[in-house]
Each structure stands twice: as C-alpha cells, then as structure tokens.
Length: 269
Image (cartoon, rainbow, N blue to C red; front, side, top):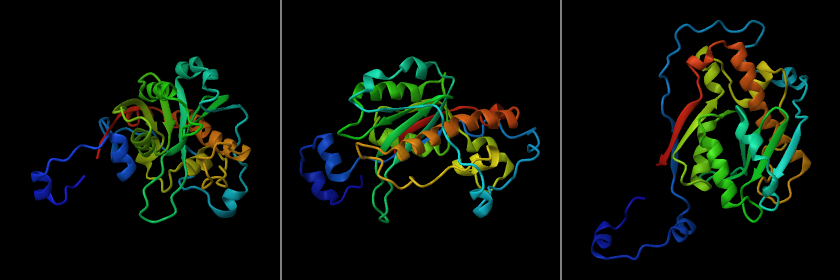
C-alpha cells in the first residue's frame, strides 16, 4: 500500500490491525502470476499448420450451425456438506485435468473483481465442481488438497487464461500458494501460428467443430443452489480443456518443445 501522511505515520506509533480486519477494510492485497520459464525452448522447427483446420474462429451463422458441445460424464458438485465423498484417488492419479474457474462478473467500471466462486477439474468421464464461497464452500482441508493438485508437477492442468485463474485463486482462497507446476495454457500451443482468436470457445470451434454455449456466463455463480444449466456450463468448460489438450497435442506434433506444462509463480503485486 502507498503510505499517505508519511510524517505523521513516522512520528506516531500505530497498533497493527489484524489481517482479517485489514482485508475487511481494504480488500485483499493484489497478486500477480507469471510463468517462470516462458520462451525457454523457442519456436524453431515448427510443424506445418494442420490441414483442414481454419486459422480464424467461425462467427455468426457459421458458428451457430455447429453442434453444441456437451459433457456426457458424471458431474460432482462438491460443497462442505458432501466433500467427504470426493474420489481424491481419481483426481490425484490423473495425468491431465481439464481446469477452469467461474466468477461472478463485475459490471461496474473500476469495481474490484469478485473471488472465484467455483473451481472445476475434469477428466474424460467425470467433472468435479468445487464450491469455494461461504456459507457452502469447501473446508480448509479440502482447499489444501486442491492446492496440492494445482501445485503438482505430475498432473497437467490444461485450460485457457490460466495465469488469471491461478492469480485469483491465490489471492482469495489459497494465500500460501506461491509456486505451481504442470500448468498448460492451451493458447501457448497455437501461439506461434498467429491465430486471431485463441479463447476457449474459439479453440473448441476451430479444432473440435463444436460450439460452447455462453448463456450462463454472467450468472450468479456464488449462490448455494446452482441450476442444472449452470452445472452443465461449468462442466463443459473444464472438460473442453481436457479434450483440447489431447487434440492440440496430437495435431501440433512436438508442441511440448515450445508449450510444455510450466511452472508459475504467484507473488504479491
């Protein structure tokens, strides 16, 4: 924080407020997330762009006629009430987890961002949706297990916009998380090819020929009782990351050279 009235502060001994009280008055401190080893491998010897795939995401009617992406696996909504039923063995044994978060959007310009309300982790046939906010949010013990997954070097977490998601999880929910491994932002795989749009929906349309619906994007993710439409939307977003990871790695042979799962650091801004 910037110090105001320095002379007064320097001359007057103030009692330090407890951290919780400081955060209640001023909000949590800001954090930044960055990849540790960006660009370490270079882009030399890239394979050609795969034939038959567009270089720009379809829009308008071309997008609307595409089949909507759906997730046909099991969806587990996890709150503090049922967190004892989580199959941690399945999560911890995964080689790749599709990753996403959902946050209630901020509509007022300049207003502070909201904390992530959900964390979604997906494998091929199952998706776990963890509620993070009180009064139904998961316990500290579950947060610690989730943090271990997010930090693990043996599990690839695949998604889009990973730096922002990790930053906000560290800022609001996991303040001790400072180094995470196995983080794969799918945008890095296609980045050397100069594509105009590389968001999750654009990548799904270009490489899966599927349209991801946006109808629930601005809904209230923090409420205790989520609708079936919200659960479906959240599961699809995470599963799309899992599916795209396999497809893009197959199409862009050797992409681990220029877009490997990376370490990221989270520090106070």
